[in-house]
Amino acid sequence: MTILVKKTERIKSEDDLPQRGTPKSAGYDVVATSDPEIVGDMSYNGYYNSIDYIQYRTGLYTAPQQISVGTFFDLVDVGLYVFPRSSISKYNLLLANSVAVIDSDYRGEILLRYKYIFQPSDLIVDDGETLLHADKFKIYSRGDKIAQLIPFTVNTIEFKLVDELDSTDRSSNGFGSTGK
Image (tube, rainbow, N blue to C red):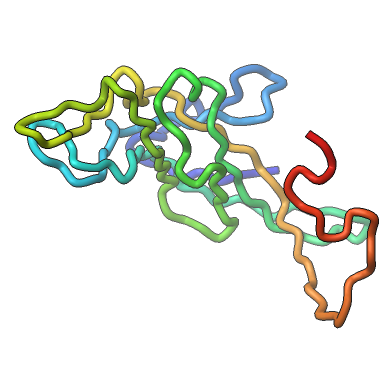
């Protein structure tokens, strides 16, 4: 499987491409190429009334190449999932869309947005106004590994409209209906 990566100011050689942490790692590490861009309603001196998200640039522009599958070597598109790394548990961050999907035809820079998890120490009261700040030790910095890429094949499916669905033992029993 081949993913083409555009040369940029940040990615100049093969050494700058996403790498696996170990030979058997599933994901390829993505590095922040920017300082955190905090987007929200800023009050003053780095304090905010609200923080919508924290965005990082990656310098990655990709073009996943189709792969052959099956007996007749049908060509299928490849996309990229962006998952949080396990190190995210050390930070007050959550990937804003949980798992990002980079479509096979997207050619823009891969940008990653995180929601900040506020802690009591992040709040200050100034003149009766409650303000927030993001603890710089609890968010990623430029140069940190901030996510991981995992490729997937894009399967084309056909939706078919029917009057009724077949019946099962589970039926429409949902959340928690099959046990703990």
